[in-house]
Amino acid sequence: MTVRFYLVPIVRLASGWRTPKYFQFTRGGLDGINCSYTVKDYGSIDMSVVCADILDPDHATLILNADVYSFPLALDVAYVVGERQAANAYFEAHGIPGDWLSSGDTGRSILCVVTSLFLYLQRVLGLLNYPVDPYAGLSLNTQYRNIPIPLHDAMQQGAISLGYTWAVNDNDQIRKIFKQMADQWGTTPILFGLATL
Image (cartoon, rainbow, N blue to C red; front, side, top):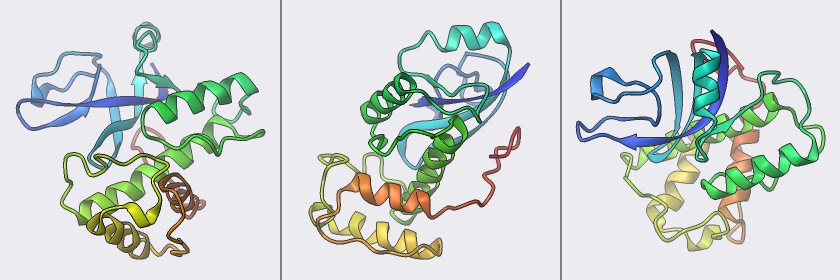
């Protein structure tokens, strides 16, 4: 088996559980790939970073799904232009800012930014008691001044509670704010249980 990282949609089960699509979840009665995995979700947004200790045939099957993004096995290799374009397209299609990708970014550095962003959103949406669709009617291009006040305030409170600097103005788009917050995670290790970034 090999430890790999993916971006995978979250499914909401009738039991109330939320879990990564395509992976077995016995407590919720979901069939799928049977392997050890850990998850960092996008707060209450139905996307997740999955770290899986997965068999090669299961990996090959998983990546056939258009809604799955697979990070390269060699995380420390820089992405070439086509890989950055593919990552950007996937990210943007799934509500994750991708316009920041640039030459020299590696799978690991990209994965760290995305995971840090998810962890920030976990904090923000935790302050709001995890609403099902906190960004209804908004996009990554929505300016801070146009965000509903409860979410507006939780974004700032979430940043401050994490010890981040809040230097946001009313014209900043959500995508820019998310990236600023992700960058402030810095070099703190991100623990997945199966691996550490």
